[in-house]
Amino acid sequence: MSVAEELENRPALAVPPRPPRPLSTLQMIRVAFANTLAACDEELYEELFVERRYIWGRMFIVSDPDGIKRVLQDNVDNYPRIDAIRRVFAFGSSSGMLCAEGEVWRRHRRLLNPTLDRRAVLADVPALVRLTEEMARLLGELPPGHELNMGETFTHLLTRSTGQVFAGDDRAIDPMVLRMGHYPGEYGLFDFLTMPRWLRFVDRFRKSRAEAKLLHPLLERMILERRRPDYADGKDLLWRLANARDRDTGEGLSVAEVEDEALTLGSTSVTSLQVYSWLWYLLAIHPWAEARLEQELDDVLGDRPPSAEDLPKLTYLRKVVDEAMRLYPPLPLMPRVATADDVVCGRRIPRKSVVVVMPWLVHRHKKLWPEPDVFDPERFAPDQVAARSRYAYLPFSIGPHICIGASLALIEILIAVSILARRFRFRLVPGQTIEPIAWTSLRPGRGIRMTLEPRETRVYSGAQPVKAFGTAASA
Image (cartoon, rainbow, N blue to C red; front, top):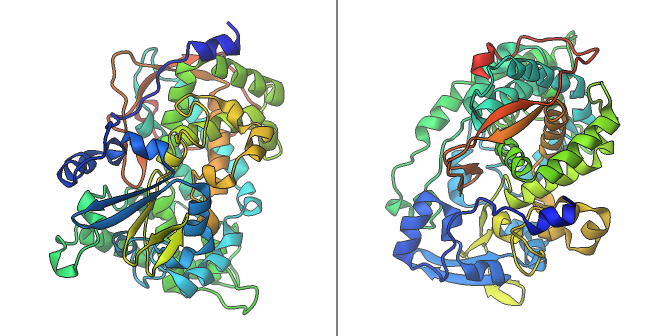
C-alpha cells in the first residue's frame, strides 16, 4: 500500500473529548481539575484569539502567531510566568530561571546558554549512545510478550542520561537527579488562579521545596570540587555551571545560584520523557512511517551505532520527532499574567489578565495546519517549514524563554530512537484506553503499554556495556 493510500486509511489519534461549546465556570472547574485539554472547546481550535471571563478574572487564549510573538518575544517582560509556578521553583536564592524575571533572569540566561548549547552537549553523545545500547541489551533479554509501560521504561534511560550529562561518571549526583525528576508533582487548577493571598489554599508545594533544600549540601560539595584549580575530571554540565562567566563582566554565579539552577534544570530534565511514549505510539499505528524510518536508519547507520555526525543525516527521523511533538507537545500549556495594559492582535489586554498560549491548541489549530489531527511527518519538509510562521510550532516554547535544554532533549530523543528502532518494533497492547492528560506536561493518563518485536540481532562494535539500569525486569 502506498503512503497516499495509508493516509486515506489513517487511524484516529488519541485525543480527549472536545466540548462543542465553551464551559461555564463550574464546568471548567470540574473538567479542568482532571485534564486541562478536555476543557478546550471547538471555538479554541477555530479562532486565533479568544477571550473568556470566569469568576477569578479575565483570560485570553492566544493562538495567533503574531500574538504569540508579542507575548513570548516582543513584549516578554510584560508577561511573566504566573505566581504559582514562580513559587514552586523558588529554591534557596530564588534566582533560578523558572523563578527569576527581568534582569536577574537575563543575567542567568546569558551565563547558562553556552553550558547547554548544541556544541556543549555534543560532547555527551558517546556516553548517551552507550547508555541507550545498554538499555537495548536489557530490553532484548525480556521474555516474549512482556508488557512495558513506556513512561516507566524510558524513565530509567532519562534518569541515567541526566546524571551522565550533569556529572559524568560521578554517581554522587544520583539523589538530586532522582528527586528532581519527580519535582514538584502535579499542579491543580487552583494553583493557577489569580486571587488574593488570603484566599489561597495552603501552599501544597512547601514539602517539595523542603525536600529540594536537603540537596543543597550535596550540590555545594560537588560545585566546590569543580571550582578547585586542581580539578581534573571531565567538564560536565555541573562544571560548566560552576565555572560559567559573563562574557561582558567576567562575573560568575554564586554557589547558591548554581545550586538553584542545577535544581531547576534537574526538575525540567524529564520534560521530553513523554515524547518517547507518544512517538512509539504514533509509529505503531502508522506502519508506513515506521517502515520508512527503519529504511533510513539502515541506510545511514549500517551496522554501527550513531555518532554526532550521523544525527543531522537522519532527516526523516527528525520529521517524525517534530510531528510527534506537534501532536503531543511536551509543554502543552504556558500561562502568563499581564503586568501592564497591552494590545495583542489589536485587542486590549488589561493589567492582571491571564494570557495563555497553549501549544496543544496552536499545533492543532484549523487555521494554522491543514488536517491538523492527522499524523504527517512531511509537514516538516524544508519547503513546508519555510511556508509557515515559526510561531505556529513551539514544542519547547519560543522567544527568549525557549527551553534551554531543547538541544539536549532532541539529541537524546534522536539517539534513543535511532538505536532502539533498528532493533525493535514496539507494538500496542490491545484493549487499552489511551488519553492525553495535561497540566504543565502532557502524558498518557494511564500510560501506554506496549510489547517488543525484535527486528533482527545486531552487535555494534565499540559499544561498551555499562552498569546503568539494574536487571532486565526492571527496564
